[in-house]
Image (cartoon, rainbow, N blue to C red; front, side, top):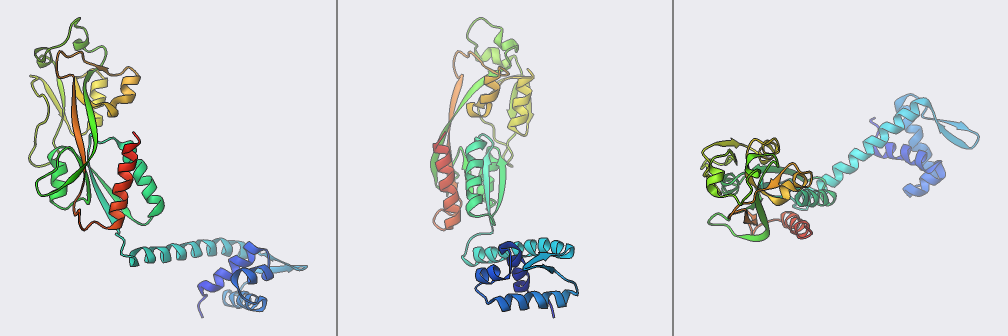
Length: 292
């Protein structure tokens, strides 16, 4: 005869409640039923789980080890039951998000954290993309939620936020040594830092007039290069707030084009068929972005 989950539950109840009588009350059973369950458990294991000291049942050394294991077993059983209930309700097993790398991480991570509290069993896959790579994640069905600066044909998106881009370089960069507003001709003579399109179309964006150019795959690498004085670039202001505050980057005094704006859109791959879970996560993202 195998030991049942109910017997392990009885063992834990006796310990947690401090005795057979209170355990019986907590389990809505008679005290004799609780006593019998523990007796059968000990017979099956071939060891004593409790020893009686006066009127109190105290765990033996073996009982202490079994109690800890029983707690873990019951927790796993509860999680399994919750997982089954989650899927039986029609909820999704995973949600995939594709975010253009210009999207600020903080509100997205806050939204995901809140979502995880409500839906701990949903797996989240986060794909960081650049330019056409974001479009392709949507078109190829690789993401249910997409945040992008463009809405591909055939999809609809809701405005999420406006990103301000500013041209910057390290304070010691030669471009900061001019005692006048900078022209695009001045920029052309210095190295520009560019982020590679992660999609197959390899699109370009922004001003690309410099004769010298370094291309990297992620915005964090580009920002690090700029902080080391290796070039200039336009970055989302929210992405470089810390570097600006610490004096690692400084806005370039351009004659024109020192700042640009990009509108970000929240796009659901199947806007009309999106599950309640996907819609709830999208709503949390909108709420967190609105707090910026």
